[in-house]
Image (cartoon, one colour):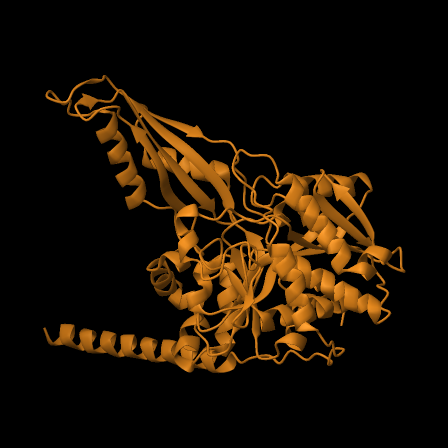
Length: 492
């Protein structure tokens, strides 16, 4: 018995020593992770006539370039927008070559002085999503008024994505005024149906491919500057280096129909309900693989010491981090392929057992997984052969993860440092979709960032009620794109 007690004491001392060593390692690693200064030379001063730019955006917002499901493009508003841009940016249209692609999309070419320099493309889109007619009375300003009021420009497209179109063209207009001549060729590519199937972007890509154009990188709309939404005090600029994939599937169950007074033990609806519950109980696994892992690695040096101790020691704390991230829908979407039950169908009358019931499930696929992986997971979780599994059209795998230390990312980071010096720039994952995915075929890397500052209360404005942009952000956007063009062209 005494010997056993001695062994216990010795074992306890070993455990205590191991914990102490582990604690020392955690503290040392946390203390050694410090912010690395990002030195940039000051950028050229760019004076922006913000009232004039706001008027240009307001004019664009008054044109209802709405992409509607199963409807043709909004021809007259799109053509009117072309005219508005031509009037608003005379130097751009006198100097750059403009092409209309697929009837409504626009491709501008700013020819560089060095034919050997790799070209780049800056992307945006001309169309907007519809406005819910049931919410019209709740808009503080009518959604297609282009009102300039209270320090904001209001209207559908102010955030997504006419602000980018106007800011990009204004930046080029002012660079031309200053005598700028790029070394590399720069394309400005504005699709007309990004909110639909992206046919305009695909047509632009095909046009460039036919000319053997190979882009070094692209910059599209995407992630934002988040204020008070990340685990550090400073605002964080998230630059999307990848997009999740997309897959909708239909599960369908067929059974004998009958009268509800004599219900079967396993009908189409109950079998389908069991399948739904199984998929809810068994989501795809969470993972901190790139780019989400890169995001937290980049943020760790900026965190408080306690948070830094956790995120600087992911080899130890990843299970805890994943559990915390999985507890909130917004962060859970960053670490796994999500499963959303979006449409359900079955039954014709309250006293009839339906012979067929179905559910549509939408998945947003994490980089590193594929459509085939998701289908295999669904079939593993729901192995019942009586349940039909049908992949629906429109599925796509995730994009590649672009380099977070490549020239395109560094150009974005330099432009941000010169425009918003207080901002911390990190790579991120776009959980929706952009036109960038089509350009992957002709571009080495693709980046997704919109120079907009968002507080927590602004997050609903994407595709939502009271879409608006602060006028000061519009000026910041012009400066950002000008600095990005200069940094991308010169590499400094």
